[in-house]
Image (cartoon, rainbow, N blue to C red; front, side, top):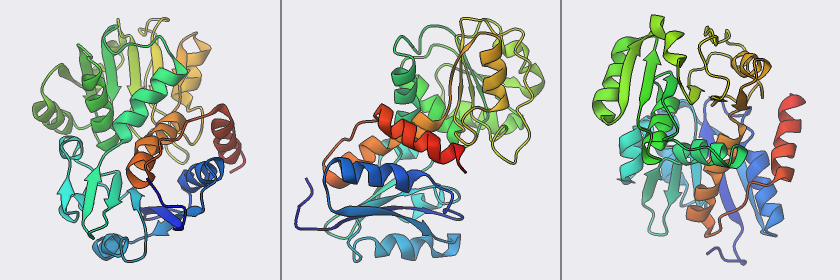
Length: 283
């Protein structure tokens, strides 16, 4: 548990990083819990990551989050990587321990799953086949989370087939790889479809996916939160599917980070979500 006599510090390292909405969220929690502290963006170039991480403890930081492009490089820097981060192949959260050592974990899968559960309380991973598009870091976290929740069939599709196959070979279990050209047909009978690519993000082309074979009962989810509604989610909503955007994934991954840093697990409230949505819409 954090000490009230100490000013609490945490932050997010990325390059670039000033676009991150994480400070808004974490500083909301500091205010909500009446704690003296702050969460800051740390613009760190890749070649400076090791030095920056090693400086966390001397500077009094409890830890930090990592975003692009640091999540994989950190695996070779921290002193201890837990089983989750090893499996996902990326670190999203670093804890600066009192003895100066650094521990790394990954909370992105937790954020994805708990976002679905909060937004769609009746959702179950074993309700039917899941189609996941993308095979990068976000997809790895999504697939890990779905497997933890008991998904029985994951149809994994990526533009580069070899990358999807490498993920499936590593994870094993219920993952079945399909070529990119089969993406439209892979929606047939799906209970959930997840866009884990960057397509649809601000500045990126929309996801090229026809939804005519997606059951109307299926849930459509995106890990993107800028914009709040991607073209993929807009098309799914317009045809009657329930949708979940990626904002809650960002919000919920912060909860276990706070537990590790400060001994408190904060709540993702309607007020916090509204605050974040207003910030994004006003960007």
